[in-house]
Image (cartoon, rainbow, N blue to C red):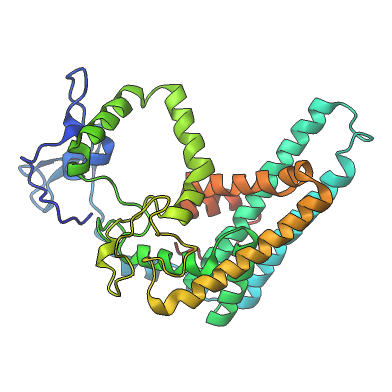
Length: 352
């Protein structure tokens, strides 16, 4: 991870201090070098010496390169096919439709009069629809990466429709996500996740938060609270306020970041065409993303008025929360793998 902060080992870190004066290094501040020990006196042929992890297990540093890994992948896995990709989209839509049809017609008071059983089955429905919805989300994600088909226009058309239906601003997310991949782990440019610096930890509020976290991190109540906050509002809050991304918007080359900061009211959002996350030329794509969301929200409002909040909560909104859950918990590669554990596997290459 790159940072402008001096990483000298003598620099004080609150991660080594706990309220009960029993030092314990925080996982977030533990470097790879501190997680292994090197015994250069053994295995002279190995430049690294003997490497031992924190559990005392010896391991060898792999000597293969990214090119070696790519060359080991069968060539057909790297071939993009718009037709095959579209078949996956239709397949997941079929799963969604069939599941809705079965539950809507057969999980009824007439067929299942016992209310607790019926409620449990509808709970299962939301879980299944969340899995299928995550499948669609991942396919739209591949559109954003250009891995769905060889055609950029086709990728963007499919991605815009699918992501908009899941309340994701397709082009806005695509642009920030691309910048994230170009600067992953950079403390000043990463668009998704930037850990707190030593200076932030060293402030009075930062140290208090750290010490409270040390005291409560293993308690069920704290864990539950963090899970609920992360899974329910983490993803929407990121889209709305860039809450976990970098906050160096004053450096935006066109001056769009002047006086703007992450957080509500800070002017940094995936939905704003004037956001410092983008350049001036990108404004029209942000507006196109907003149009897709406006159309999806209009359709949802119509459905709510027609069928009621209770029905739509079960049919769409709770499965939508399940989708956010899988994205927040597993990240995209694991979400894709989990989903394909239940569904027929494909040869589609997920490049996140």
